[in-house]
Image (cartoon, rainbow, N blue to C red; front, side, top):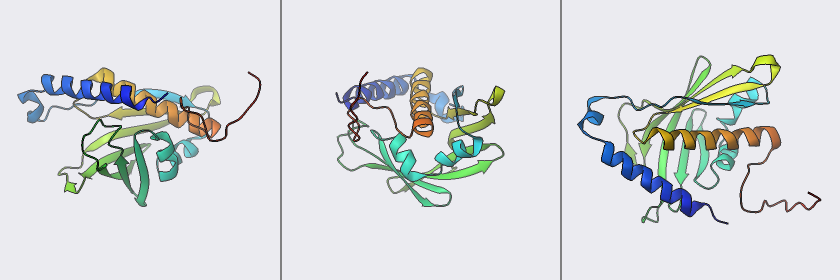
Length: 187
């Protein structure tokens, strides 16, 4: 079963709702960040942080949405699949992002999209890492800065963290389509 079409419909709906709700107040510098979404990952803090700087593993996390490559020690290039964005344009949307380490956080700052430079470069995604209680690994919190409705943003943030946790703990990302390993076995 292909989940891209339903995700695209939800994304179109969220963008439509956000554009209806957006008014003059959005242009006056109002912040759009959402409350953080947090998951506990059963790996050491350094391993959890390393995932977000690895283009190959991030491509696995964003498998249905984008291809990710590390274009330098602190720069990511994401190529969003047109079908995932419900775009009629057949060219992928390219997002250039700088990765900035600040204390126990990683900030992703958008620097341009599909050839257009972005002024300001404020963070669009903020990851915070803390040791989980009782030695259970690492707590990873993700906060996104977007004008989209909070429910859509928090759902997307949870999906990203869920996939990242699965990749870190099992080496695989959960998908509805069959995995290439084609394992057989009793259930």
